[in-house]
Length: 211
Image 1: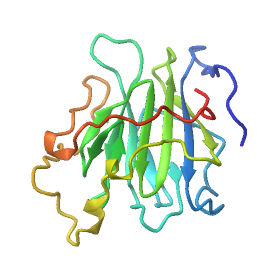
Image 2: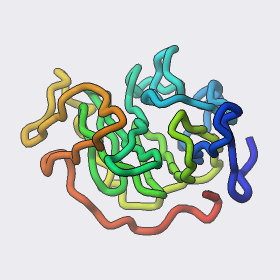
Image 3: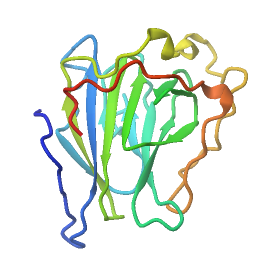
């Protein structure tokens, strides 16, 4: 796969309206080719949640033993009064948490995404850059595999302690959100205060990431 250079415009033939593009950069320290073997260079998707995990039906399938079959999802929705797609990230794993922009999400907690987002889960570093489009019929993901780390931070800022619990129950203080896709009328709920504390990033994204 090659780096993304400059803005990418993708149009639906039926509407001639530009699709929103998610530039997704991925890194794992082990650099095992099998980890990202099933990651396509580009994926066009509709308005349903885009699933990330080990399962064969995951849209972004990663081969990692610590990863849940459905670990997280990227979910498009339209805020009331808006004509553009917005996205949230929802944690779907009962035994692992997801670190997003300084917040720790546990099972069924979700967070609206910013134009640039730093995500870690099960040893994977993922940077998602959102390039807005005018179409409401879908979006495109363009994937890039990075040879070097994407996120520089203190190790303690990523809290994976939940993965060591044996029964998969949410830890005290966490209030999971109700299941179900938010759809196109209302945005996602913010994670509870018990789901993770906001922290200061130590550095910005590596210069190798192009949005």
